[in-house]
Image 1 (cartoon, helix red, strand yellow):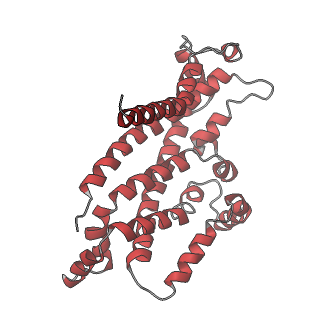
Image 2: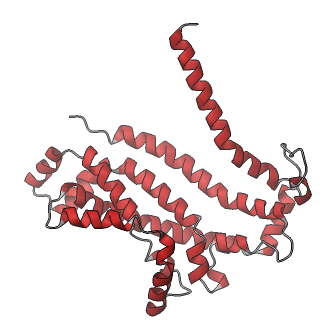
Length: 275
């Protein structure tokens, strides 16, 4: 065996090993959702599927309004993702390719906001939502999350490297204003960045627990994470049922990730610009 083939063997062995390690928690989640709570505590651990999946799922659906919470979460996550993609891409494109007074200091201020822990803003944010009368409504989840510093930073970095200045100059010569340059020139090139930012934002909003727990007061508007937390008992918890509910909540994210990953790769090839 040559040194080149040996290196390839070691590389692929490491990649396969890393993939198996990263996938094991998802496999364990599926296995435990098909078992009883007593099976979860057994040693050695049960590593193969049981026959309690549908029983666990039916008990989840009986205990909480799963589908109502699912639709609430889908609505909030989808709308926040769309708004973040639009506003963050506009700001990121402006920071990358448009000159305006105070641009450097505004960007430094933007980066500074990323260094502030989100937990520190919970009380001021709640007071602000209460002042607006938004406590208990979806507006308290959607409006504060429709722009974020990371998304602007990410789009700005991607646009700086991927959008040629000559292409923008040609658009200006043809009479394009800022929005037409963004929509017709920048947007097709930014599609791979959109794929990542969209997936990152959607997953973050879908899994958010603390902020919805604080601002939502109506059980009919609970998001999925809040609804699933109601499965925990006061004195004991049926962990098999909780894990089955978690599996139901994770499946849409896995499906979305598989779709986005394929779209991400195809967009990189389609959006490439040759010099």
